[in-house]
Length: 178
Image 1 (spheres, rainbow, N blue to C red):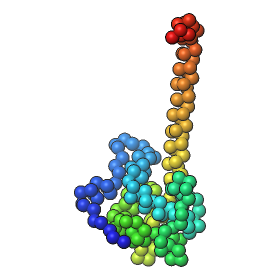
Image 2 (cartoon, rainbow, N blue to C red):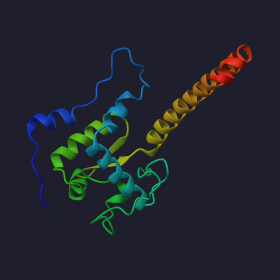
Image 3 (cartoon, rainbow, N blue to C red):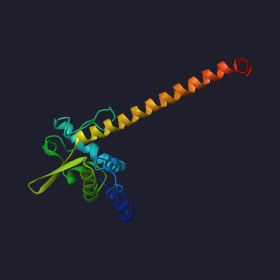
Image 4 (cartoon, helix red, strand yellow):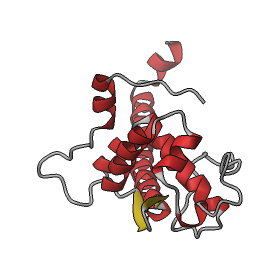
């Protein structure tokens, strides 16, 4: 596998930790959404989730990030290694993704700071796993926001229909010709 080096300027801007605005509540999802806004971090998180689901992890530690399409396995080199049972190292992730281990480590730090990944030191290795419960909570939060907007749009549609009906009652002959 051939890996391309990324120029320092673009790597630094794409791997910086998301900052939360001053005065933002501590339970704000802004940092998590900012972390998820990077394609490489999304791929890292997906690889961790696939490894967790392949190892038979509980729903709280792994999550399907494939929009219902299925995970399709953990990728090359995962079967029989035992690496997935307690998470993956940055080196194992780098073997699965077209990104250097150093870049993976930086992306993992951002994901961990956002509360989407946790790490555990096992001997001389640092292993990472996706926190499915946190992703599920983010999904539920987005669903509640979507439901609230649907309700608002429903009320607006109802008001518009009512106004149209009133207008029709006030000027029926004008509307029928029109």
